[in-house]
Length: 248
Ligand code: 13P
Image (cartoon, rainbow, N blue to C red; front, side):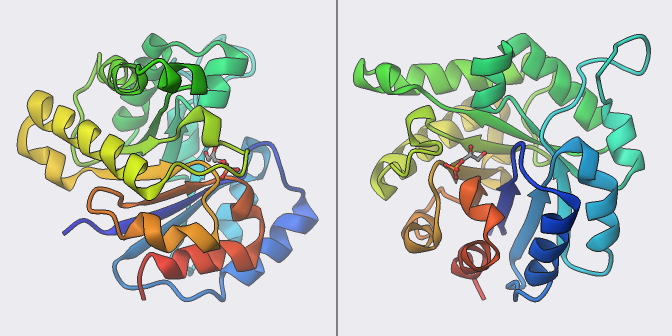
């Protein structure tokens, strides 16, 4: 049995004041024994969020990291640095990083390898655009991204995959539970073909307009092991309801 994971991606949002009130509400929320929860604030707030969450079951993730070791790479934050400040997870290859900052599959693979080497766990995002879905290329695109991500290290149980169809991100349009399940099944089958039985242990999250009202139906699907939540992770009540839909 795979545990459920509910991960909040705060994207480029937050402030010292708003983080405090969000976290103090989240610390009150009840988390089922088989459910893991994490929040991913911007780099600037990581240390203070780790500090605030000490003693709670909520873990902390970053939204990106460097593809390099430390050195003359202005503006880059290494996986080792994240580890040192108490981060446990790193989101890699989010579609916003791919579309807005030119991140390629090779970059994703290099970052995953640094994350694993630092003893952190990657949450690797894949997902097709609307155009790709309408042209029947959704599966091919997601599998290409997954293969690209494992160019340096193959998927094992430390990896989490997040299927985030680009057209569902921040749009209010969620993939239907059936469509999401179908893609998760394809991804798991591909992992099984390439990496063997570990596929059964790999947590695969759905992301894209997940909210309290659709979480339960998504979580009921056989291959959906939780969610990567954007907008709704900034609202304590909404996020707590998604966490509770993952199990009590
Ligand atoms: P929304 O939940 O705001 O659609 O964002 C999803 C996402 O991109 C999480 O990484």
